[in-house]
Amino acid sequence: MSPKDPARQREGARRLKAARVLDVDRLLEDPQTRIVVCCGSGGVGKTTTAAALGLRAAERGRKVVVLTIDPARRLAQSMGIDSLDNTPRRVKGVDDAAGGELHAMMLDMKRTFDEIVESHADPDRAAAILGNPFYQSLSAGFAGTQEYMAMEKLGQLRAKDEWDLIVVDTPPSRSALDFLDAPKRLGSFLDGKLIRVLLAPAKVGGRAGMKFLNVGMSMMTGVLGKVLGGQFLKDVQTFVAAMDSMFGGFRTRADATYKLLQAPGTAFLVVAAPERDALREAAYFVQRLAAEDMPLAGLVLNRVHGSGADRLSAERALAAAENLEESRIVDQDGGKAGVRTTPANSPDPHGSSPSPESAPGDPDPDGTSPEAPEPAAADTTAADTASSDTAERSADVLAAGLLRLHAERMHLLAREQRTRDRFTARHPEVAVTEVAALPGDVHDLAGLRDIGARLATGRPELPEPGA
Image (cartoon, rainbow, N blue to C red; front, side, top):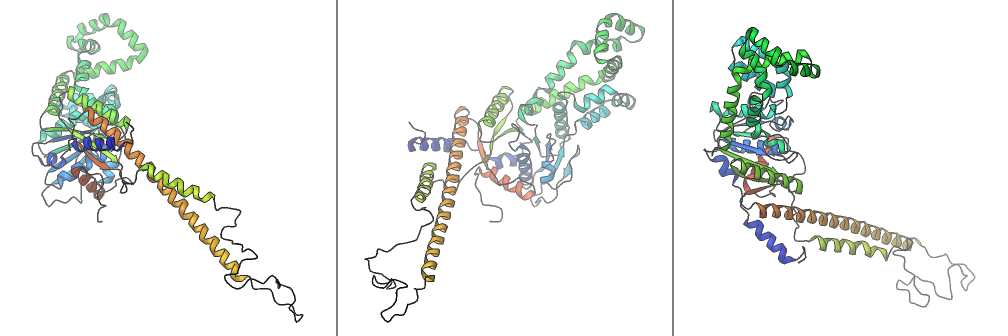
């Protein structure tokens, strides 16, 4: 059966209507919902979605904080804040008639690590750790540190019990779920042979420890010293010795946050564009969340295209455009459009053509030469006709161009529909809501409010604000 078959199109529409619709307002207003995590591949609008959800929940009476892990500044700009940091900042301009509040913050990875050290070590040991060169490198950008610190910050916010709802905006691509692996990676790091060997001298202590280091680690330290440098290795040993008493706390808190993400009060929203690669990533997220027993609330299908003239199919639009373009070939003949010639033996409809016996310029019977007929009127008529034809051609070209643009839009809509249908067929259990592709970026609260309305209705096409 052809993809253009109306029966197949009706079947696709039936499947679309049968798909579960995500009730965003019910999710946001439920007092049991305490954490919403927005995840998805890069460039699909997770930051905007998280901010819009936070604003809508706040204007419905909840005290909300939006935590972004993405270092981009879009969240701060859209909320009218100069900059975000590791401390929640209240957003102004939110409708607080229902008693809600909106706060926003951006994860500062190093500052979060420093706060953990300062709160779980005595002042002297904290100062030694914070001043350690290896710690400074680790806290500034060691692989996996950002994801672990995101879990730490989420755990801190939730432990304070100050917020009704925490909305988390995650990093792009598959690393968005790397924070789920942070406890396991941290446990593997702490249980690794290198850490146990580096901890051994500090645990043994004194000369015995030095003897153990000289005998048991002589070969390893010789190799590492050549590769990394002797001073770097000493910095690592000093860091590990200072952090020894804190390692268990890291693992305990990470495990607690991991369980928090599995709890009923947490909801994951997968954000995707209606494109093949983005929905493939979304399918990965859905499968991974299911494998980790993480509660998935649904899919936000962002930047969905629509048309107010969808009854005009792409095929009919292209046919009409071709008819308009091809009809011009007939009457573009050397610029003579609109010029008419009258046969010599045909009557002059206007009574102005000279008789065969008296051509222009021939003498009259009385010997005088009559003046030639005034050609101005005829020239004006021809010019007007040519101008009219030119205008018609321009209108036809414009109309054909618009029809072709419409055909491209309809092809895009069909492609998006097929992509969504494939995802829905493979994951019928996932509820979906749609948001329209807007002509520009969202840069203020009004735009976020509009996005929130579209999220809540599940309808991509809504009137513009104030319309």
